[in-house]
Length: 285
Image (cartoon, rainbow, N blue to C red; front, side, top):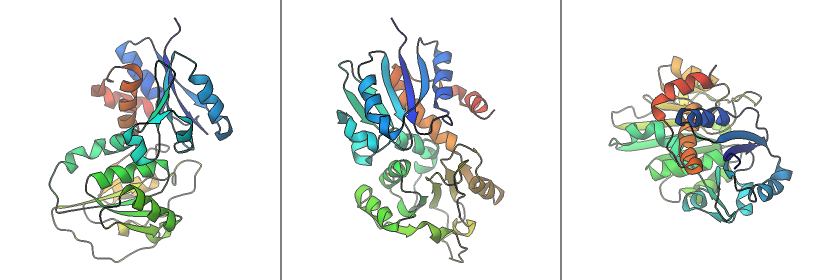
């Protein structure tokens, strides 16, 4: 019998750390399985899925840019999480070859914030930069945790439509991404009991992408600054925030968190999370 496998698809795909993560866990658990990367262009997406659905050894795939929304119409069903978010980052193959789309980004994103979110706050606000597939999951996740959102995008109309779709309850706001580029003298509420979060959910600041124009005067006192970019791991935003004394969360936190959920779905075993520190060293060398 051939070896069961899963993979990650995207365009480009060489930068993906997913194979290193999943194969690390496969090795730790001693599983007879494999995880790899597969370059799939938008034009080749339908053919890729048609071929894989016939392969009984294929357990499914993770989906990265630019396919998280385009793939939806090519699947047999969406689970409630993917349906609500409107984006798919994980595809699972059933024994009969049916393909189901789900999304592990939201739970993976929230994982490093769970301890803080378990506390009582009288006000929670997040400034989220970006309106792509990952941002959709992040907006849905944060709205579900009771945060008031300021969503910034190159197209504020698109940002408002995303809020209307994913977070119709609450007094959320859509702004142009340039709103955060210039300094502000706004007097933020710095009382104890506030939880403020700044999230770069865009590819800006990633190697090979334009820089993110963001002035730290828009970060309220005591904020957590979270950047989902993984290359480089310490983005200019995180470096500046850390040096200014803010708590920071890097992109590996979300990447490992969402991968752990997908891994259990692909291979039927929970990954060994006690070794995350060792895994991080592997991913950063």
